[in-house]
Amino acid sequence: MAKKFFRQKQAVAGLVVILAFFAASLLAPYIAPADPLKVDLEHKLMPPSSAHPLGTDQLGRCILSRLLYGTRTSLLDAVLVLGMILAISIPIGTIAGYVGGRVDNWIMRIIDILLAFPSMILALAITGLMGPGLIHMLLALAAVWWISFARIIRGMVLQIKEKDFTLAAKACGDSHLKVVFRHILLNAVSPILVLATLEIGSIILAISGLSFLGLGAQPPTPEWGAMLSDSKPYIETAPHLMLFPGLTIMLAVMAFNFVGEGLQKAISSPGTGGQGKQEGGGLRAKRPLLKISFFKIGEEKKT
Amino acid sequence: MSEIKRFLLKRLLALIPVLLGVSVVTFALINLTPGDPAEIAIRASGVQPTSEAVEAMRQKLGLEGPVYRQYIRWLWKVIHLDLGQSFNSGLPVAQELLLRFPATLRLALCALAFTAVIALPLGIFAAIYPGSPIDHISRVCALLGSSMPGFWLGLLLIYALAVRLKLFPVVGMGGIKHLVLPAFTLGFGLAAPYIRLLKTSMLEVLQKDFINTARAKGLRERLVIARHALKNALLPAVTLLGMNFGGLLSGSFIVETIFSWPGIGKYAVDAIFLKDYTVIQGYVLLMAVIFVLVNLLVDLCYVFLDPRIRLS
Image (cartoon, rainbow over all chains, first blue to last red; front, side, top):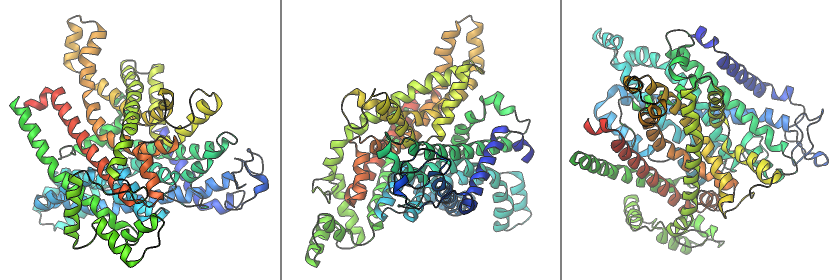
């Protein structure tokens, strides 16, 4: 699998970018040219220069430093949200898929009801009602995102549950816990990893989108979406203010999408790396299909 | 026809528990507020809350008595299209939402039109001419559409086309010109999955036997594509439309805020900062009901478009 993954240039490039982002988040205090919170009104709205490679914002703060420190808020929080989503959705999806019957029926009915809400609108409402703030926004995103994950994971469990090796383990008298952990979840790790990597880009977009509206990270915390929001009044006089945060968000999302698609291809294609290309006109073309097929596993389309 | 009627009836009946569930969740949302909603409502109107005023407001909001009674009272009102009153303006929330709904609908429909204009040619021609320049353009568009934050695209368009070239107004609502930038911003992001899906399904359909048959009987290629391939390749896109409608509604509140578009999305975002909780509640409920109904409509379209589903 690793060989197939590293054979794909796009996926490798994505991985390098992601590693660079994580390195930036850890090394920000050492590599940032200035303090991201230091206000210097004498040098506000400066274009890129040697002292401030990406210029300064409306308060004279170094944009590059803010972007580097912003990696901690935007990227690491996305990972945190993903962790919360998986912590909720894996047990619920597994119980629904494995136990089946009434339990599955009830869980799925609840999921169907929650899926009737457009997820970002529900996240907006939860954040709005709890009060704008980073923690509230992250909780809101986890509270709405686990729903589709649980549904997909349930589908995976349903499929793996019927495989010969699972049936054999059951026939040998393995306990339910052993069957679930050793046979079902272990085999679901790869598709869950693909799903998580593909979704993390969307989570980054959601975090920066809500922060853009002022519902997430509060000033003066450096956050990519909030930086874009701050740039609005200066769009005419200092367009660089909106250019760099936007590019950074796009780069991060693209990198995660490339890695997710690379993983997906490495897992799904048994043959050479070019197989997906011949069938589906490129990896990217396959992504929505994967999502749809996940949604359709053992379950009718949502109401 | 009776099969369709039975299907329709089944789907409509299935809506009842979902809508009831939606109402329970929406009702429960108000409990997320930090503190007593009645007190917040009084503070929002700029008055210092006294215990009598809070009690009176609690009665007005229907927050007294056991929770299940509160819910039943609230549901009864909602069924009668009474979503409560805005804490700030004092006007009925349903009226305020309906007043702004046409603006959001206009934006959403134009965004969908942009999605179709971008995705249909790119997806279809990329499949017919793989490796051609249009295939590369479709890849780049799909990549940008899925990775580019919509709010950034909106700002870039404002900068390039409104501020620099002065081709469009910067923000606000007016004629067609006001609509172009927000609708394109919303539509471009939505187009990405359609480009991919259309290309994939078109490639799949083009390899089917009936396409070979159509070609073998001497049908012109244009007719093979238009009459046989496209019709089948569009089917998965219809399903995706239902799934993506939520994205369209979600995207609209950010785009409306950027472009100061006076729709319900902007109204809801403004309500958050004014702590106008009844508006937020009403907004969520309305969006969920619209989402559910659109999905029902999409399912029905699918049944009419694909006879195989009808037969099964």
